[in-house]
Length: 139
Image (cartoon, rainbow, N blue to C red; front, top):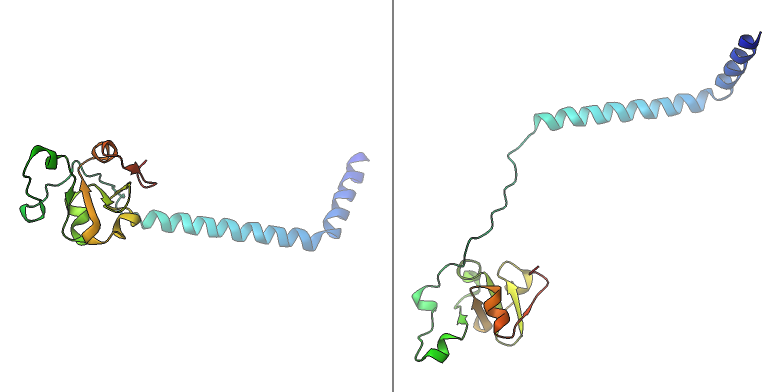
């Protein structure tokens, strides 16, 4: 008797909410099929892993870009680079002669510095020891 009452209530619930249950079931089915399709396609398209390489040390500045030192005091001065395009090749850290900040050579701020104002540093410590402040690009 209790079983018959329970089955009657379930049957009434299903009849009353038939449209909503069918709609929810359809959404769930579409979501599962979409997920499985994306998962299978992702397995087919496995590319090479992304490798990020970090430069080991600053490249040597060529003779034409190196200023001639006349005494030991001028050896303490940072080296100026001739062109903005050679910034990424020649030094890891750069600054402007008009500013007290130092940037990574790959930083967007470093690329905005005019070539005639560009100052090259071999390390962040060298730049900071000369009174330069580290920029947001240097963490």
